[in-house]
Length: 180
Image 1: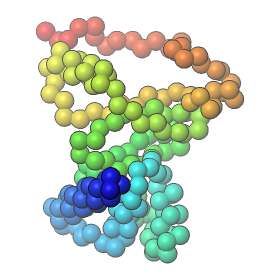
Image 2: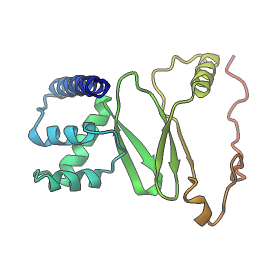
Image 3: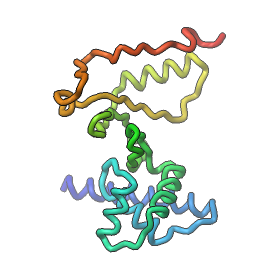
């Protein structure tokens, strides 16, 4: 019973996100084409962090006729509409993930293998609010990504970093106090 309720809730959320995307496209004089819908369904079918070329391979395996250019253009539309997030993964490019309203999380990204770990930390959220308040900002959104080397990659890393250790690079504060 629990699984059925969760599935129904997931389907409702997916319909809501599709409606958001449809309205976004309409405001720009664009249509929800079969190709855009196929990409939307692939991204929202499960929660993963996907590369554009990976999406292309998956859709073509489903015998969908879609070009690489359409994938990239549609990903930009999905990101701009606010329902898909883009994560920078080193020099390799980006990964994309579905976003759900009210379902906030941040990311740990392994610079060696590209593994992405999602997390939510209330202390970080509270600290961000404090910093924004101190500087007179009303936060509308944020993206928090921490890069490092995951446990699986650390043994084969050339410069192993112990937990709690830093690379030796110290950030230089722009200002130690908020503007007056």
